[in-house]
Image 1 (cartoon, rainbow, N blue to C red):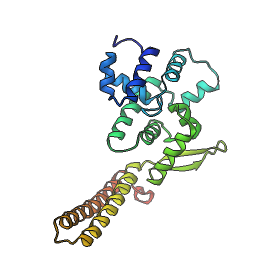
Image 2: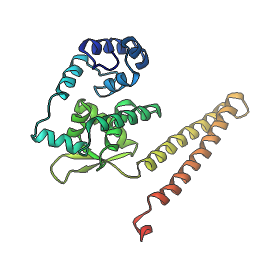
Image 3: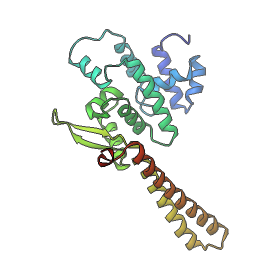
Image 4: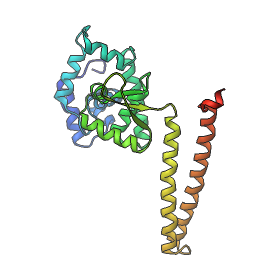
Length: 240
């Protein structure tokens, strides 16, 4: 059983398990499958909130058909950097899982993982929709979230009228700065709350210490990010 492909009935059981709040591991045990199989199946078909078993089964059957030489096949190859789609999917799924564990919402993690696994570091909305198998609205929401965090940006596609979503090479630098900003906001709120409650009270003391801790961590994070960015991604004038 573990070596066989998922059947339509398997996929319907996965949907029931997700609806009942079961973990991927629990669903895998019920189907006698590896947890990784269930995880990949769900993640590439809309995630736990948008998983549709019949739609997922149709998509799976289509992927087994020989690929033609038309424009769609060329477009898929361009999206994946002409690599084996199975390898790209495996890498992207693993990266998505890690990003989710770090606290990034699922769809945002999928979009970011898709951008990471392209050579150009950019994709259009249509390419993301095709690659992730989700609606344009889901892509739009995820992109807006990542833009707000300053992890990606929009650029006009020079080959057409579509916009491209671009991930800079210093994406982790931007992510660190975003994290530092959030920590600073929490620190400021903690310090002001401590003052309101009284810094000599147990609750006030606790909040005041939290504020001090987060201020120091935020400063260290910004300084460290700037230091290592200067070493690994120097400005153009530094390269001369």
